[in-house]
Length: 202
Image (cartoon, rainbow, N blue to C red; front, side, top):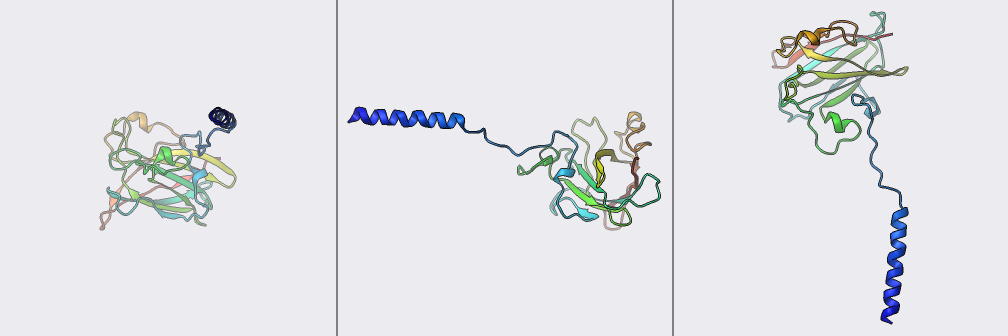
């Protein structure tokens, strides 16, 4: 009887081993191979104006707005998706651990906007700090996509007076001109205000 029990027990273990070896490997959530992309993570419903950080996020409040134009530089570009992401006041991309898509790279200080009929966009966030290595000026990354326009990266938002801005950072870049350094002015409520218009490439 014991021999029969041990034989049955061995057979069950043998078949379980076969089943496990044939099972497909566990699936992980796919992550974009594009390090700077973010349009694929955008919510279905978008507005032209957003607030990015949670209310308790430390840092100096920053408001940036502008308009997006077609390549003629005159016609407003409606329905353009802007994706922005940046570091916190410590110069890192903060994460909560539940990020999906490229949020695993970019952290939670990121957001999406879609331009209105006037090409207008705006976002409120905190002023980012440079990377701890201090090898680049503080910046906000930007990509742009549209109904008939694949996502592409644009020059980052950088800030006038940043001591880390060097001549090499002021060469011709993706926007077709000098890197646009935002002139920030603090309003009566202590919020840094900046404006940047964008002309799409052909």
